[in-house]
Image (cartoon, rainbow over all chains, first blue to last red; front, side, top):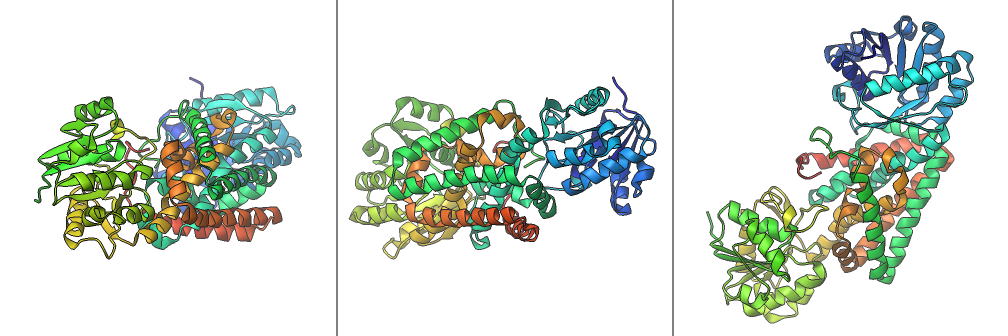
Length: 291
Length: 291
């Protein structure tokens, strides 16, 4: 098995913490250094076995790293990647776990030391919960991780990034940053926006009359407001395009319902159901820990 | 413990089958008779322990019943209730499990024998799966069941209906039929419509890039097209009203995103999240059998 040496994790929350726990569970690293803003959170991460040591000083944390994985909110990633690239060893690999890619990759590639070390990544896993206390060693196992190398990405760094994410248990897909953002606008950002709109449309006093349909359809509305506001703004145009389609679907449904067009509604529903059924094949049933 | 005598279940699918299995698991009935359209489905229900005996002739199945519970699709319930009421013993209680109530109750109350025997009910439980093979003895346990008696409902039948649904493990709520339909339009029918619209807006070729957010937000789009077309049409105006609100929420989100108004998006998300958080208190975490 490959060995990763010293891995520095910038941002030890749900994703960063899960990476740390997976590295340790699989004995993939000599040393796992956590980098964060708050001492208390780093201490909690250490106690939970997500990191070996923590520091609030990024430059110190990356100084001896072989790999840095940046798991901060999307608004901070490009700057954190560039700082890590500038202060780590010559041979450093920097990767990230951001939910958006185009702007981040462009900003990193504007910096020579960034382009020399960075491979953009997005492990597609998560939960409406956040923080290291929700981290799990198996969060990324069998999950898709999108890598977004460009023509400028060094071959050896790409090879090492593939190795890093594969060792964590991910299935890899490689895409252009823009194609990633357009796809995730639909498969992830849109469901989040729709869940919040639905949660906003159901008054609290009716919730005793809600059951499994409401529960699941709105679950991700419980996600962190700051994280999701940043993702929507970072991926604005693709989200607007995807949003227009779901708005059109609802408008069509409204017209058919107003007209009492049962044949249309049945066809529409059957088509949506057939499409949804194609999701279940490659994806495992949810486990009890991830409701 | 109370005893229910002979219980006839009209429509032995997910809900009817779960009622049969619960009656048997709790030893609540002397005899459980299933009434359905297909011999093979009744035989499967018998084999799975949901009923003791089955018949395709409703008049025969209800002839000796103390309680009849009608679990057919909403389009059939009123007629099935009236037929059962007309052919069962004098002392019969008829109740149902329909997802809509106003039209059903009005149609049943237009028939003297209907109004003399019937108490409308809606146990709020289900799954995107259908058929007796998905039935579970605990499907209704700790679920809310709405009873919709009217001024014309006989007191003794109401008391017996309360007893029946309580014995099955439900928590009871009593509402006007119209208030039930307005509430369920939001808490159940709206999430189903939104799930289907979302499933329709995500192309199949992107599903390998979807994860838990998509999975849960679209789960109920896997429900039966005929059942849901009938529910939407039966509850047309309340669903249209609720739909307008979710369309307004999405339109407001679009405007804020177009304007790059991060403060608005953050406030909107935080409010939706706070509302969603109030759901989790009285509701158990989903179990692994009900993804």
